[in-house]
Image (cartoon, rainbow, N blue to C red; front, top):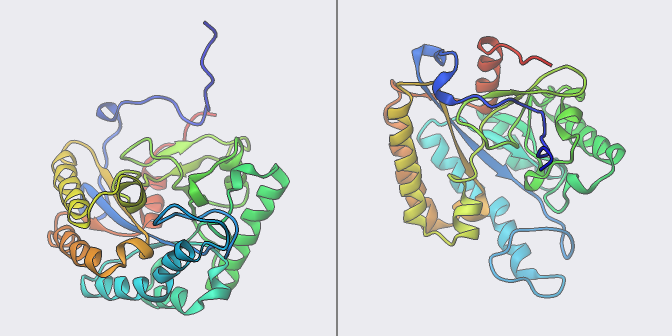
Length: 297
């Protein structure tokens, strides 16, 4: 049998046999909230579905997603403020034109704004390299123009990568990606330029899209998942420094009955502040870049 195809972005390394280090303050578990602020085209393109979509313009699913930007996110902001939780915003750049008030609210809080493409109605993985380069450049320029600083991190819409996405991100000046869910620690990815790109763990389990929209998990069950994942990782982190991300979409978790359960879960996570590092994904990348040796090319 011929050798399996390999990405050559990283080498295998068991988590039990890696260099040890601490997060700031001597903490062992870093926790961040990834808040997906997404925008969808009306009547065309991709989009998560509450119910099987009918022929365009599919008002039901479009309006359900838009609820998140109009209502859900404002309720979630009140929750984050009440628990003094920082967040990383994963931003479709077209929202600067559609609802700049939402982005401004996170900016006022001092939250991190990371790139998440132009809109979630497209996949960058389907584009020729030149067009994917232009997509990354356009989204990056919009964030830089509005925030006064370029974003550090990137999450592709639909976690969709082409064969060269990590290369293009490194060449565009990005310091980290959230696309790879292969680990509980930050890891370096090789790129063609020789400049490594850091992979910060982004959850595909403690994430409301696969849990609720795909597996049809209930709100209480998803909240229990957050609590159980936190409790287990807090114990595991005695042995290794770990990262726990919680991925949230306002059109899903911003629904009132789900928000009530989310409040319970996040209050549990935020309570032992002296035992965990509540931070932003960019904070994790910044610290990891200082303590982790870069990979051999």
